[in-house]
Every structure is written in structure tokens, then in C-alpha cells.
Length: 410
Image (cartoon, rainbow, N blue to C red):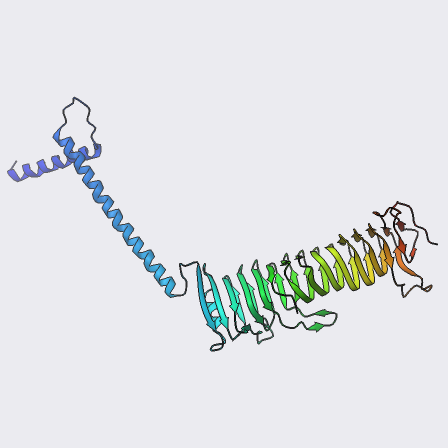
């Protein structure tokens, strides 16, 4: 065997022993036991290799951090910022599409942006966004210009939108789990369409809070599990509010009036002090009020309920029909009062009817109980209460006073 072969063989054997040795590191030494230099050196070699590997890992982490920083810089350059709150000035006097374009460019952002707006802005679409639009110097958002898109503000895709100190020249439509807040928002004039009004605020599977200002001109339609809260500080005269398809309207203010108020399709309405021209509660719905004053007609129909926790005054007509009910904790006065078809009423105070039915040839009766209506008045009155006015009832109906005595016709 020549010298070269010997050297190669020695190197191979040495490498093999080194590999075996490194595989067994770290070597553990005990007291009073001699340590071999090769084992000590093997420990240091393994430690050095570990440090080198960790350094390579740190270099990789630094590269990843640099890449993330570059991505954030790119997103901010394209309108998406890491700052959760931003404020942008919008001058629609110079560019009527400025607000529309800004909202289009900021879709899907996680940033809450406040737009301080001046001038008259063209109609806007707010989709998957979190924004506050604050007007000044008479700022407004104009109605849409096409028949298919007539709204001034269209809100969709779980957006959160606050409108403050701004005038809407057209309708607002919010849907799909969006949340809307009004602070001193001026609405367009409500347009009458037959017996109702054309809706200028539609809340569909969404939420609206009227937080401050007035409800003047409001023609509201909420449906498909929608909710609306009108806070206690609100004033004004709303043209119409319709809660439909399992929706709810809560009015804490005592200084709001309605031309028409409707709860239909398993919906719920509460009004602290209900003042309206017409009240309609239908199809499994419920209306509650602390006090009630209706200048024309009130109707509960189709397994519905009206509850008043105080006095109730209905100028023209009350109709409770089709398995519905009416309850009042105070006195009730109505022009005429008609109850029929397996319905009931209970009045804790006194009952007064001030008019007579047009169909009553005797022109004497203002209270009618027909086809299985059961009514009672005077429950909280010591003498059983007072019925002012004449009534008519069939053999399938009954009328009790507060002492649970059957009231007979004179």
C-alpha cells in the first residue's frame, strides 16, 4: 500500500470516527473521571455547528421581515394603511365624484375612515367598508341618476356607516348585515303614493340607529330581520314607518309623530308616546306603547296584539279582528270600536265610544262585539268601570265589566 492510499484511508477512518463522535454529542462528563480531549473537542465542534445553523435561521427571519415591510409599504401606497383610523378631506365642489371614487377605492379595508365632505356629491356605493361621512357648509349627497340606481346612498356587505350633518338628496338603502347611524341627517321630502309614501330609507337585514337630529320627512321601510332604534333625544314628524318580515322598531323618544305606522309579518314596534294618524298591526305582529293617540284609525288583524301601558285615544275607529287582541292599562276613548272573529280586548280603565257605526240603522251603537269577541273594561275601577256609549253584540260574544259581571244591553 503506497503512501497516498494510506493517507486517504486514514482520512476516511478519521471522518467516520468524527461522525460517530458528533452523533453522540454532547458528551457527558462525571466527577473524578478523566475527560478525553477528543470528546471535549467534539462538544465544542457541535456547539459551533449549532451556532452557525442559528445564524442562518436569523438571516432567513430578517429576509422575511424585509418582505413583510415591503408588502405593507406597497399596500399603503395603494390606499390601505396599517393605521386603524384615518381622516380624508373631500371637496365635491371641485369634483362631484370625489366621495364616490374614494369609497370605491377603499373597499375591503380594515381602516375606519372619516370623510370630511363639502359641496354636493354624486350618489355613492359603500360596500364592505367602515366609514364616517361628516358634512359641513351644507354638504349633500345627490340622488342616483338612473331608474335602476335611484339611491343617494347604497350600503352593502356588512358595512358600518355613520352619516353626520349631511343632507340626502335621494333615498338610502342598507342591506346584508350592515350598520348605519344618523346624526343630524336631513332626508328628502317624502312623496305620497296612494295611501302610503314612497320609501326614502330602506333597512333590509341591517340596523339603523337614529342617534341625534329629527325624523322629519322619514318614510322608513325595514324588513327581513331588520332593526331600527330611534333615540330619546329625537324630534320631528315622520311620514311613515313600516316594520315588515320579522323586523323591529323601537322609538324611545316621546317627541316623534307618524302619519302612518305599520307592523306586519311577525314584526314588533315599541313607541314611548305613540302619536300617529293611522296605526296598522297585522299578521302576527305586536305593537306596544306607553301612551297612544291616533287621529284616524287603529287596526289589529290576523293574530296580532296592541298593548298600551297608559291611556289610549283613537279619534275615528278601532278594529280588532281575526284572533287579535287589544290591552290598555288606562282609559280608552274611540270614535267607534269594533271587535270580531275570536278576538279580545281588556281595558283596565273606562271605555268611551264617541261616535256610531255608519252601518247601524239605529244610529246609536259605537261598540260592536261580533263572531266570538270577548271584551272587558273597568278592571282597575272600584265600581267596575264605566262604559260610555251604546253597544251591540251577537250571541257568540261577551262583554264584562271590572267586577266580571256580564254587561247587558239596555
